[in-house]
Structures are given as C-alpha cells and as structure tokens.
Length: 508
Image (cartoon, rainbow, N blue to C red; front, side):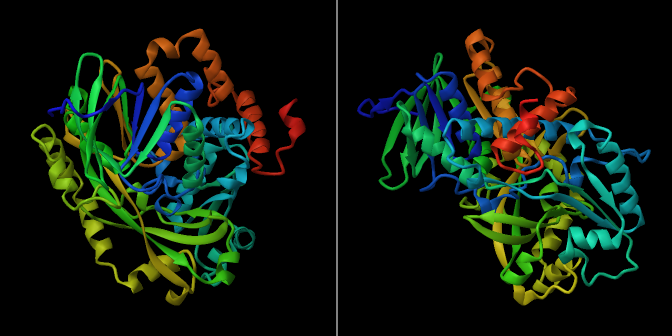
C-alpha cells in the first residue's frame, strides 16, 4: 500500500471496523475505562447495525442456554454435557450487568427499548427426544444458573404454556417441554444504536458511515489503514496503535489483509437464512414464548427451528425458522465473490478438509435451498399444527460466516461459535464466527481488552472501573450461587424483566 503524501492522515488511539454490537460494546467499555481515548469507527453501509446486529438478522433470543438444545449435546453414554450451557448462561448474566449499568448511567433511557421478559422453552416429540430433554432438564437444574426451570410431559399443562403449539396436535403424540420464566427477548439493533448514540456524543469519537477499510500496512508500533469513501470514492489514510475488526462476516477478508501470522489458516463457510413471518394478528397474540426445537441431523446450529415471539420497533412479531440456505456472500449486503476471494494458500487445506468432513451439512443446505413453500409449511406445521401459508410471508434473515480453522489431526474443522484472533503484540484483534456472539459480547470484549491492553487492564484504576461497569467482575457467577442470585435479582429489577424479582431482594 503506497500512501500519498498529500493525503491527510488522522491518528485516533482506537479504530473500530464495523458498526455492530461488538464494536459498540468495545467502544463504550474503552471510553469508560479511559475517557481520553480517541476513537474512529468505520462502517461500510449507510447506517449502524445494518447487518448481523439488526433485529431481523439475528435470533434476538438473548442466548442464555435456557432453551437452545445445541448447547447441551448428548454424550455416547447418554449423559448430557452442560459445560457450554453454563459458560453461555454466565456470560449472558455478565452482559445483563453491563446493560444495567448503561440504564443506570442514562446511556439507555429505558430498558424496554431493547430488552423484555419472555419465557424460554424447549419443545420436542418422540420417545428418544423426550428422554433426552428430561435428562437435559435434570442435568441443568442441578446447577444454580438454571434454577427455576420447569419440565412437563402433560398435554393440558403444555396447552397453558404454549397453546399455539399444542392446539390441534395429535393427543397420542408423546411430547415434552421445558420452560425458563427468566428468559428475554433482546433487540440488539436498538441496543447497539443506543450505544453508538452515546459514543457519538463523546469528545474524541467519530463515526464514519459509507466508509470501507480496504487495506492495512503495519508500521513500528502502529497500523496505517486505507479507507475509501463509498460515495465520493476518495481514499484517505488513518494511523492508529490499535485496530478492532468487528465486521461480522466481513471480518475474515479484513483479517487476511492484515497479514498477521496469527490469522493464517482461518477460513469461512457462509450460511444464509430465511424466516416465515406471521401476518395474522390473531395468531400472533396466541403465542408468548421463544420455543426452540431440535435441529435436523447435519444442520448448522443457526438453523435450530424456533417459534419466536419478538418485539421489533415496538411491535409484537411472530417468526418461525430460520430456514438455512447457502450463498457465497459473507455479508447480507456483500459480494458473491466473498467466498472464492477468501481462499488463500494458507487456508485452502483447512477449508478442503472441513468440506470433506461436513458433506452432510452441504447436502442439508442444498436441500434447504431447493425447498418449496409447501416444504417450509410442513416444517412450520410441526410447531403450529394446521398452519396456513396465507398467514405467513417469507423474509430474508441474516448472513453468517462459520469459522474454519486448522486442526492437527483433521486438517481443518468447521466450528460453530465465535473465535477471537489477536496479534501477538495486541495491536490488532478480529472477531470471527456467529452465535451466541451478541448475547455474550460483554464477556468477549472484556477478554479482548485484557489481551490487547494487558498493562492497563490489570492496573488498580482499570480494575476498579471494571467493577463499576460489571459488579461481579473478577468473580465467578457459575461457581458462586449466592452471588449469581443477587446479581440476577438486581439486573432483573434494573432491566424490568419480571415482577417476581422484588427490589427488596436486591438489598438483602
């Protein structure tokens, strides 16, 4: 990259690439930890949260492992591995702590702008699945983070829980469900916009929309970025000591351009999705829960079927899906050349190996793309007996890029989740992958800060500020039941999540 001497070079302390939930969270954390930081944010689209953080482009569940069965796999001996569920549940509680701080600090005027209480449920049918769900329930409720979870195989009780799912169902079908009352619906788009509104109001913070970072050059102790204005086509240069790449599906190509050794060998597998959105107000009003089922064999976790009550832009919505699909785009507003252009000499072996090991997934995606409206209706009928196609419309959901990484034994593996890649000197970090990223964004960004700002992060000043932002900081909510209970009680009151968590419990 050749830098023109006539070009103006700005020198912010921090550069955030991508205007989604991750950049917003990191930006607010860093500005609170050091108000003197100058921050420049670059977003290739004309508004913030236009990709994965948008309400229509993610599940909005507030992933806390209450209902997502893919977080609790069954072992060969029939026991349930709950380790991932515990980690995710704990991370979501940390996120709620930080969001509570945002409310108390006035950064967010009212919590119902972005988060609401709604039960989280898992629903299955058939002997094998019912036994699995019962084993899962018994395993999870042995841990305090899942205290209060209910289990039922009783049809009449389930009709009270989820009438839309149960009415019209064959009474002889064996079914079971779990319910966690302390579930949430999160509009991550609204949350992200509130954080960016705060950041824009702060001295030393600039947000540049329609600006695309297209190249990197590493210097001694800094990075120089080439940034193109997508409207004027003008190119400018930005120099900074720290770069965060939080561009969702666009993170992998940017990581490759940075050329850091730590980024070698990573590839991406894009998966697209669609929702069936209910248009009948009477049907929408009959459902008040997030009901997750079991994913089909070979399907990706983002394709776990769920019948999902949402609040989007102040209006109640009912969605079913997502139906998976395949596109070579890495972003919903990306290019069909994204996947082929991401293939490099250093990652072609892991990508080929991962492809060979995931042939059932490829077949599944091909079958999903070929689905007819009647095929999609048949899948919906499993959750809404007697559903009619005229009550639902098909809408495009978000685009996700699952991580492919090197593996000593397999050559390459496809992973579902998030992966943080950081330069050895901490000067650059990139977040790859997808779910449950947004829900666990606070824990991810706190970990990033400790990796990239190790001296400051361990200083008494920053440690004290962390405890202000996240009161449980430095302690384990998964190991300390009393602390977890008090934390949940407090955040439930601040975020107005449920009346059953009384304010007097907070001060007990």
